[in-house]
Length: 331
Ligand SMILES: Nc1ncnc2c1ncn2[C@@H]1O[C@H](COP(=O)(O)OP(=O)(O)OP(=O)(O)O)[C@@H](O)[C@H]1O
Ligand SMILES: [Mg+2]
Image (cartoon, rainbow, N blue to C red):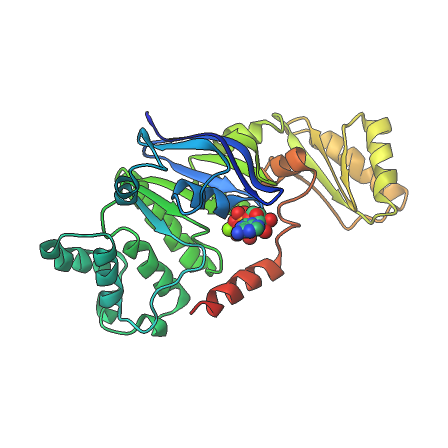
């Protein structure tokens, strides 16, 4: 497979602060490439740099071999883009929203009607074609936004957090749509804060934190970084967690990662005996245990190993509510 996007030594500084800090990335034609990271990691900035909406401090981006700071029109024709805050024109109907984008992207006049019809069908919005987009549900608006970004039939699609703020059903629908597009040959670059989404949907992932790429690979390659074993996870309290860590290290010879009240360690694959001995030990001495589990490595385990924090902890309800509020504010 050929690389359709090549990023080398990309840096973007705002004053002294490097939002993107020396990133190298190669994205293959026809893959779903995920940029996974917490709030403020530099995902949107990276995307804006690829799109040429922001000027880099240093480094280079080549799209299908073309320097993205030159030939802007050619680059624009190649890429479809869905922003993080879905902004469909709420006073315009679905048809008008789509037609507007045909004009913005210079779709030939005699092709507009056909493209609009096709897009309405793809987005399953035929029945509300002439209703104002502002009356649509969040899921409908997102579907409109997605097809709208492809009116000029681009070969690369860039989606900035395409599922943030969507309910579970709409999220799964969006996953199916993204997979369909990939299966039809589209290259898709998407950002996400959701570990399960990156794992289930992306062919390859770059984990990004504080503007740097911490690791890159297929979901299985990333999870293999944890080792072949199972992950032991214990939740206690901040007073007892260090004591438990000591016991696990001295008595069970485990290498323990300790973060506040949470501990994790890698057990040999399927080593339920050791797990049971640990459970016994924990019950005997009255440690305050709130959760204890043994599971297959997840991308969160990878994230913890790479950054020392859980991506899950940095998210939570407030973030999705925040993003939703942000989206509502833009309507
Ligand atoms: N125009 C700007 N001026 C100054 N700082 C900025 C600007 N744009 C972004 N930043 C900062 O750069 C960092 C990366 O921001 P960015 O929006 O790329 O993060 P993100 O990974 O997309 O986060 P989120 O998940 O919240 O969308 C943040 O600390 C942000 O505050
Ligand atoms: Mg962002």
